[in-house]
Image 1 (cartoon, one colour):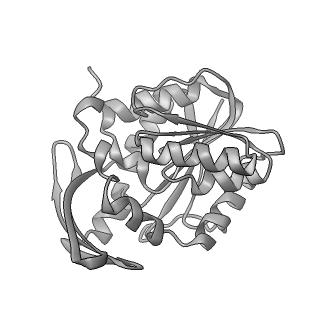
Image 2 (cartoon, helix red, strand yellow):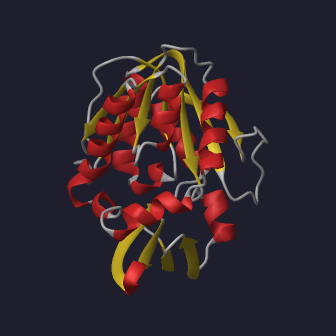
Length: 252
């Protein structure tokens, strides 16, 4: 099957007002806790190589680099990767920022660990998700881990789905109007973002919904296997009804 990357409407979702609103939705304390979790679960040490897919504005990449990891941070938005590159240069941090479509980009080195945080793995349909997994697996060292953070796997989405919701981030308000659809199973959401000065922007995004069993089948096809499921970066085991999952998969 051909990659659907070229037609993925999520490729431009974080442009415009939402690029700034997203920063306010992620508390700094959460990033700190997640980086400590990543460091511990992956068994990282100074000098470790980490791949950060869909890195956004680099909240994990910067903290990992400050712990002396060497980070390759990949995102489809040039605004993000250009900013990361500039800050990394100014602060002398070991971060290589790459602007590329994550679904088609191919790594060229071997990593100790890889991450895809902030529900970003849900932006890809099965074809692209499997391509990403195979790319990650091919460039992880034996025993290396890939950590996926999600709040839209089926075991979460079915219980917590809302047709209408509001999010608030500083000077930004986001109205979410969602539909739960099938073939493929997905949530399509139209977001209305209201920024400073009552500037309004509307855009649509898609989260593709996979069960844990479907994900495990894709992991196995890519040479990976689930190691553990957590619901918090404090390593609480995931249970049905929890609102977030951290999926830790391992390369044989």
